[in-house]
Image (cartoon, rainbow, N blue to C red):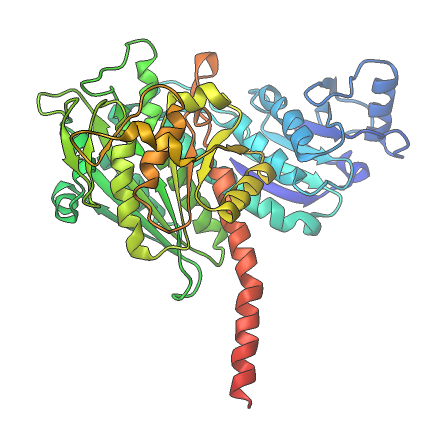
Length: 498
């Protein structure tokens, strides 16, 4: 889907020829001296159009309007959250087979973040999974125009939103694919494809190379599967070599049976989504390739299956991680932390400014936060605050959870340095405490996206979260670094003239 931004005032929009003109009607529309404003005012006064975001009124070929259909869509106070709800509700109309050309019109100057929210909501609504279907109805719509009073005023926001939408789509697409169409090998190929889009480099390592690195915990999880593991490394160098990178680590379990600690059969098919963290890292790099911010980013994805083969890891086995720490595996279904711990150790070689891991890690986080917010754990208050603020701004929220040392008591083992589980109480927290052992003093954050990475039931499918949160965070870091770089350049120039 292509998106276009156009300067289009309400009066001019009446002459815009298209199959569907969706008009975002703000509070206080009364008094607008144009055909569309008058239509909305009369509909509201007659009680035919409620003012709540998500409500709609469709009109066919109204007098004075070139569009074949007009859809009046209230957007409340015009806030990003209200705008998202209003545009999400446009999905069925935009996907109608008779709609080949469409436009979404902002009747007033959009609030900060409103264009971003509207574009991404439209992209989400228009996404259709087709990779493994022999027959699928794709929307006839190929380009969606967003009309605003002054396009130049929101051009930067629009371009960023479009890039993030493409990153979200990339993440959703790979998370949605069945495990036999998204093996570790195929995930590596998806990562390599990103290197063709811009300044992204990719290295994919196989079992022999991972063995040389000493990633014993990662290899132990993979040993029960016929599919060979892959360790994917992505590099985006948008800033100078002296700037420490931010490392993103995504859990890439392409299918999780639970291993010998086998999961129940109902809904096990959804364990194809257990690589949601990996998919989000791929999505972020898809956005970076287009946005090209002045920041250095490394993406690490340990990818494998967790299967109950005769060679599979057994409860009670002790494995040695890349860090040298030994781990007693009390539950083979707690495998995500085993692949992540080696990737976290590997991340230290980049001397990063921060490490953020993203993982569909625990059912306990789903119980705690549901599907609304991702769980955020961090050893650094400033990092946690930046991530939280980025999530709020991107409408991709998270919530900070505790990391008290007392939670680690349950991870003690009589037979190894640490156990991989600590029982049911506070399971999301104890999982984070396990990962914390492998990050040293580097500022670190862990996002548990088990509740936010996908939806079940009739709406089953990946969400692409937290691509918006992570991209917004990286863009903010790039923006914060610009004044520092400028000040450094001034000091250098001043010294040179002395």
